[in-house]
Image (cartoon, rainbow, N blue to C red; front, side):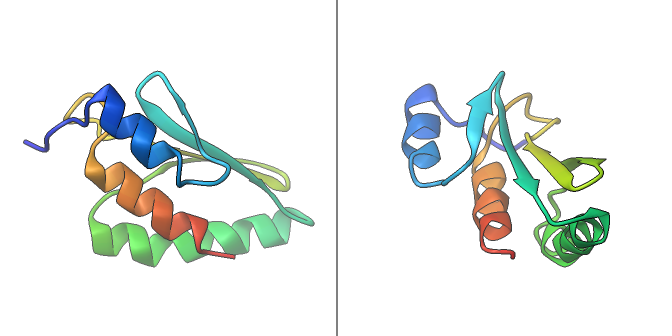
Length: 93
């Protein structure tokens, strides 16, 4: 099983993720786009990196807003995999 990060490790890693917040052992970010089409195009860009990492975000789409939530469900909280995927997502335009 994947090892959970400590509170200190989570705080340290969260400092370098612009726009992400940590709530209830989950990483969250909401991205806003010009319209629904751009929001969907962004979501489609998440498929390959998520599949490659074997770690998939929860995604909520509301017109031009995309809310992404990361947590490691089987570990019951945040792991290094969540921060790695968050870093990758942060680089996607």
